[in-house]
Image (cartoon, rainbow, N blue to C red; front, side):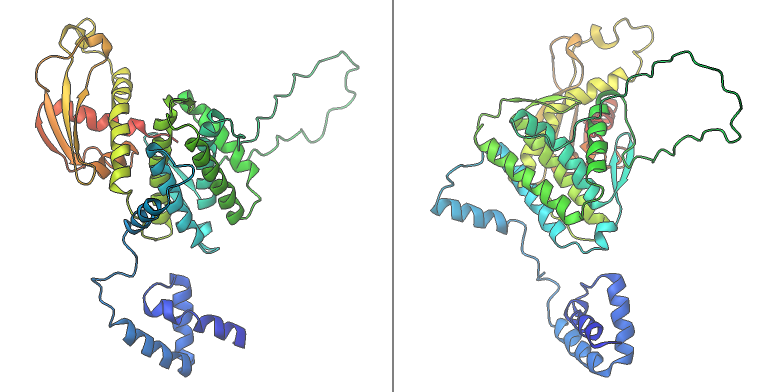
Amino acid sequence: MNEERHDALRSLLGAWSLGACPPREAAELEQHLRDCAECAEEAARLRDAAGWLSLDEPLDQPGSLRQQVLDWCLARRPAELPVPAWGMPYTAETAKLDALLRDLGPEEWQEVAELPWHGGAELLRPAEVLGRLTAVDGFLALALGLPDPVPAAAPSAPAPTLTPGPAPTAQRRVPPQEAAVPVPRVPPQGGPYAAVTARTARLLADQAGLPPQSVRARWRQQTHDLVRSAALAPQGSTPVDLGFAVLPLRDAFVDRALECFVRGEDVARAVAYPYAPPAPQHLRQMVELVVRLLPRALAGLRAARPEPAGVPGGRALREARRLRLVVDGPAAGEWLVPLDGEEAGPPGGEPVASMVLDGLELCQLAAAHRDPDRLPVGEHGDRAAVREVLHALPLLSRP
């Protein structure tokens, strides 16, 4: 072993003694320790020293520390261009994901993350996950007058004009072969998600030859541009067409913050890194958005199911039902959720059921990262209504 490699392995002893060395490098280092008495002696000293560290006092700083420092700084010197409250979850979640990506090594950029949604799951590497986030964030960029990060679709070729000509004198000995079509990393989807998947596929093809850190830099620059532009539109009323829904800018930013958290957690799971949940005040905004969008998901669930036989108009002859949703945990709150569409008439009477669950679990279910039939939920009243809400929530997820 040359001296350069020896020094490289020796530099890993500190991380190895704390159990923070990647598995492949740890295996190589342990093999080296069998043959190098000097490194083995130092490793033993470091491992003994690491034993004095209490497991009850983790080295990682608490997730709230960053917000505490920012609050203290802003109290001393207010920002010249303050970010509106509805833009803060996006600011925090993009910064958290960027911090994770900065720590990734070359091998970790090649890991494959599983990205579930209600229509299935996609398998993407971290740089491709960033491409997906960038493509959908591009809808916000367009609404704010920023450049679209997604290249324009290639114009379709005109149909060839057939002209009469002489018949061929001989048949080809080898028939023409069709060109191989590469399998797209993002399977094409129809319906309301066609625009999203088409944009993602074009951007992934455009960035395919770039180093992962260049992809990260592109994505991070766009997030900075979006936050700065949001500060100039504090009302947040500009409509944003996300391809599958049109939301006001303030809701679109919270939607993108939730997506960023969920996909960041997907990447962290693939590379075996810890990943903190959103801050309580940000999680509350995400929960409120999910509750506001829940009637759309319920409408989608009703559209996929036939009306009860023998009852004209289904529920149109009954009073509209409501469910009391109680969210526990840091984002605690209570809402009355309408279960039936506008055609059912005004709501009346008491809620037909009550449901209690944790706010983070609610958001994970809305992202199709939880099984609605296995989620721990407190319920009272009409069990069918509770099941209806639980099965509608994952329909808010998308590719």
